[in-house]
Image (cartoon, rainbow, N blue to C red):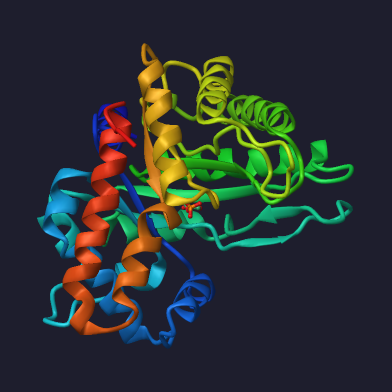
Length: 334
Ligand code: 13P
């Protein structure tokens, strides 16, 4: 492992004013997004949609440090035969790859999930590197509900995240470590804080036990937010203040950058929260975005599967990317 090179990539992924486009929806997940815009989930449509984003030069050059791809996309070619990975590289952005294989029920833990995909990962990673991937992503999901999460779910998911991270670094690929505490429940912001603290403490302990070099990772956490079904809402300032406090408590300063997931927040909320955190400032790591839905909802709607809408979709994508870039600098204004 060359740690200096891993660190360079991790620093570039979270460079000031730049963030990550999470375009790694599985074929099943993108179907849900396409259903909402009455677009058939074909291989060509998935290609056309992603090509539209990767050819949005202004957004890609100025605001997008890296793109997380799904396995299908990393091998796909644009309509004119250029590999999609080349389009990303030509725009000065870094290609990355989702390497987990989704979740399965965790035995003996009703309602809880474990992320799978470690078998053969050591063999898959060099192929992705050869295809151009310089970073990877693995997402663990922790749900909050009656009697959950269990320590079993938190510990086994943290263990798998650290196994994945160690394998990535061995293959000279920067691991995005993503332990996502879901915001689907009825819990309040303080319960989210408490569970996320537990999850992050356990994750960094496992990273340490498995000798993962923190200078060569990017953390992708959730923010401290109330569950969607909670009656108790939280202000932008409260989310920012609690999330920053939480991260300071749990994330060593050796980590170069933190790139949040949006997790079901609206576009504007995700931007406002990131901005408010960066306005607090004086942090040991860069705080930026690694958004899927909060970057893509607007361009998806504008595109709606029609070639005639490409320019409008690209304008919508550029706008969201620019707003999040400003938020990553603490310079966004509502
Ligand atoms: P969202 O921003 O839509 O949560 O997606 C980010 C991601 O990559 C989830 O794994």
